[in-house]
Image (tube, rainbow, N blue to C red; front, side, top):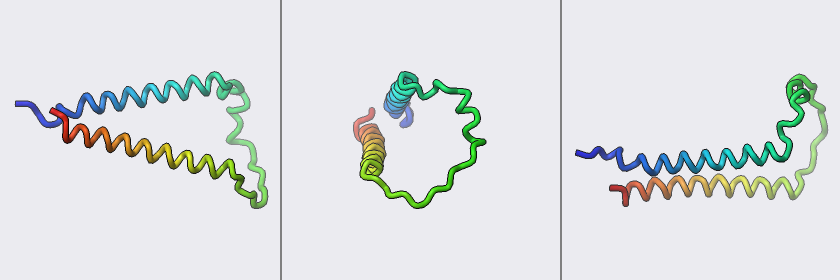
Length: 92
């Protein structure tokens, strides 16, 4: 007798592989753009005092970034829902 949970394994393994590939792409992008270049400075960043500044106006670029992040989050949730729905209705 086949267990019901056996039909979910291929979908979740595919989901994990896709996440791993995306994380590798982001890591190599950060490496290529020099995000890890100055390790001596990065070591002491938490110890530097924060500069207090007045209220800053939110630029249009920040709003575009926020909308982009919401779009990416919604797309990720939709992709997860699609995988689950496909696994439930078409999994054998």
